[in-house]
Image (tube, rainbow, N blue to C red; front, side, top):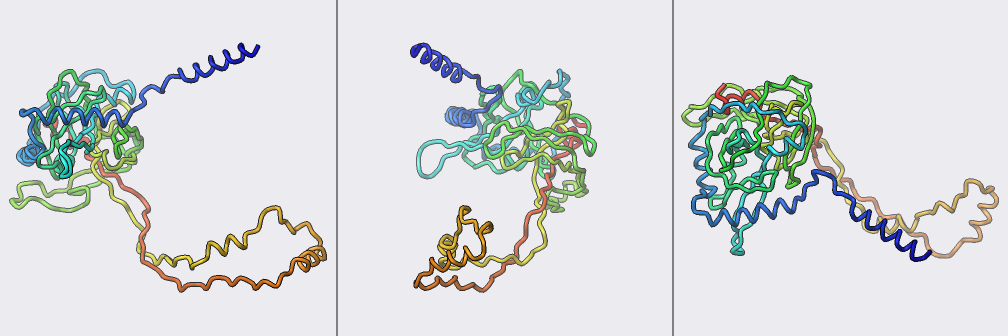
Length: 351
């Protein structure tokens, strides 16, 4: 009987150990390791441009538009399939303390054509280190170097680049999503790779740049009229930049760009520190739930207290400190400004 019970327990333990991992679980460390290994290989390839050269290309192709054919394949059936069209933008660099390459994720990109054209934000590529290397990590685990920048628009925060890859699964840019319609996003906030968030279109707003800085270049060769931005309720953070926001049909209708936090007006907020010894005083005077005197008669309480008198001096409460205030603003709401679909259609398809 004893051996039978032991056998049953071992069988149960084996069954628990063999429980399948949920489908689609992402190993963030494995992604980092693959990108680092890819960067080390890319660094030894003399045909791969340094990231500083990519930044110069980014500025040289400013204002250029492509004339891509719109993808006509079957729309993604679910969010996992959309994830196959989403890439991590990784940056390899060397520090001043060791001879090794290091890696950090810089943003998100999405696939626009089967033959290796991807889209991200202008500011993602504009911040590359001079002597680093830039790569993308695809959902299937492949790591490819960024070969060249094809088009860009600084004011509208768009950059289009190419990798050497074929047979990719592109996302098409769809019609503008109406206010209140569903939105979906897969991005990589703070290295949490392939994170899904959902929301809806809150509004479209006219501004020249996401932070409302009405600026043009010195030659005034760029547009100065306001640009429409999509405001979305999907959560995103650092590392989500360049993520394609898509509708229920799997069509891209916007792209992550920036956030603006709304604050309360400055208000005086007390910042008086706790007086010295305050915590010890609170612990010394703490009562326990068992000492409930609510059900005792008044005379019983008096006699009990009289028998517990001691000659010890009473502990003095800490002296109150004068209150100090600081003018502080408190966050109320985050506005998430995204590149609108009409901008993407214009730059990608020439519409």
